[in-house]
Amino acid sequence: MDVAVIGHFSIDTILLPSRTAPFVVLGGAATYTSFAAKRLDASASVISKVGGDFPEAYLWWIKQEGIDISSVVKHADEPTTSFELNYSSDLAERTLRLKNKGTPIGIGDLPVGFHAKALHIAPIANEVSLEVVEHLKHCADVLSLDPQGLVRSFDEAGNVAENTVVNKEIF
Image (cartoon, rainbow, N blue to C red):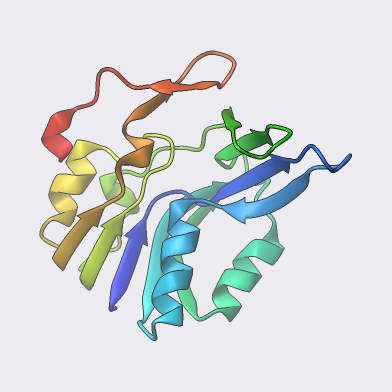
């Protein structure tokens, strides 16, 4: 594999001031990174977990784009990580709220003998641990990290806040 991405897919609900109904779309850095890799003619795969609420149409679409999703695990009794993005009237600001948090990705979720030329770690809600990152260091020639899902935390209502207890060892 040229590029492998590890992180959760998400279901994003986008609220815009000009619309009465929200948009519900496929989201997450794993989505955007894998799609970008394919557009650059790289082979791409994703290691992720989704819940029973994750639409089969999304998996079909990702697969139709030529992305290997054989390491995407669907847990029927768990939720998919999902966010609500609420934009201000001038679209200059948005609030981000975690609606559901999926199950973290563990060492046991990684394919046996896994190797990629490049591996992009793309957590969105703290689903990738230091232990997993340490293991992944030996699975790719190039390792990159999108830290967004490590530097934010969530209150009980799901509102995003800066994570003041980031394990800097992961960087």
